[in-house]
Length: 193
Image (cartoon, rainbow, N blue to C red; front, side, top):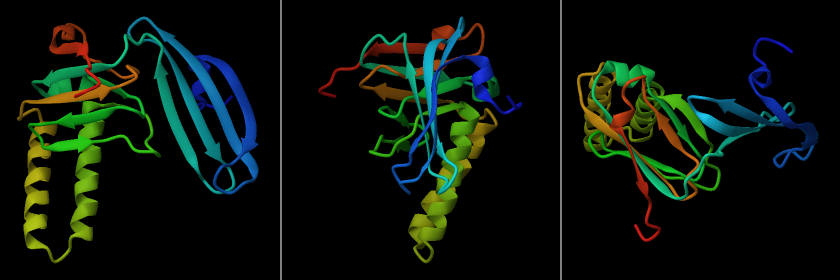
């Protein structure tokens, strides 16, 4: 095993080479790893990566699910930004009304394991790509720059906002820094919302 082998931190449930759904070659490394952690509970990481065409897919399943849920976390400062972990399953929607973004799941959605900082950096990256795609549309460029400025302030802990995860399968979670568990609110998700 090398230093980048994530399986050393969990129990390998399955590992093998399968046919890649993209290129059709027997070059897809498939691994399923069970992680048990007192802080996060039990989860399974599914990872697929093709050596030939580069296709990859990652998913997580949080085994301590309590059913469809809405998780809300109030990000108050830079400690929350840098030390709060987000586990979003591929079926979950993640949003922030104050920052003005929604990430809806799609057929090729991947699970996300990151910090609030990592999520915000992804939002800046997406906004920068959209600026290129909207070249010449000054109004869109202006709105994208305002969005990036707001996210930059949030990254520095200078802007309070909420992170909301709505997961119909209940396989997502938010893990705040020690002593801030009361900032996480979990409620049942009504399938009609």
